[in-house]
Image 1: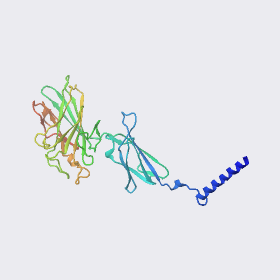
Image 2 (image 1 turned 90 degrees about the vertical axis):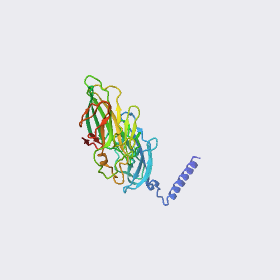
Image 3 (image 1 turned 45 degrees about the vertical axis):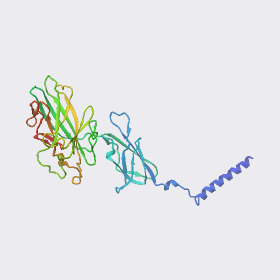
Image 4 (image 1 turned 135 degrees about the vertical axis):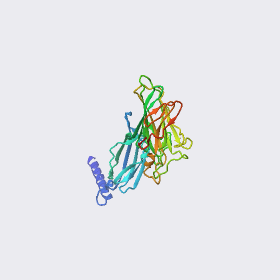
Length: 343
């Protein structure tokens, strides 16, 4: 009985071996994996900031996979979990990220190589890590002094930074209230600081500025703003809500007596203490057919000018003297959006 069972098993084994040889035509093994020349590029995008203990997935990040000749061979948008997968043939590729979909204020900080090589024998994972983008460099700063006949005084300082195509100004998202198209527009982040200088007394500070053009004609290749458009806008970030002021024919941008953008600090400021207010000047249609790389001449023509609200007026460049009951500005002092001091 046992010998008969052994004979049956041996016969079955021989039949199985014969079938295997017959299926390959002469006993050659069929390694189907060697014919598979495609694999998946798996992308995982996460962002983090110092205030976050864990990485957060970046959803809706758009990117394309580009071949060495510059042809896009695949595109994808990350899902809610920050992942996406593109199937590719073996070869070298690079990832091109749509910068407009990067989280505001974030920049790529991972060690993403210039090219990724798909070998065709498995999946390839590429992590994309984003972190807080560094603040743009300061392009220029101007400082003026305020004084009133009541004996109160403070120093006013306005800084503009290098123009950006979006992101944040401090903790504030640029374009959160003003219409902003990063493909055509430009944003110039600004910071206003006021330092109280009244000895032994707290100083109530209300600072203001207007946006005009410098004396003289625009000399660039683009189109300057006029009284009939609203291309120049100021986005201000208050402790309550941000606001947007459009400089147009309504408030006579660059003409007559334009309205000011102002900020009032609620509590009196002790001598030596400094208060800060952030704002962003947005210039619409900074890029045009005549200025595809941007109109730097326009930034050198548009100027931020300090304005005295209530007691105090602009006197000589760099100083303010008292004149009660007036809201005056000076056409001889200011700071261009390019950071050049005027006056």
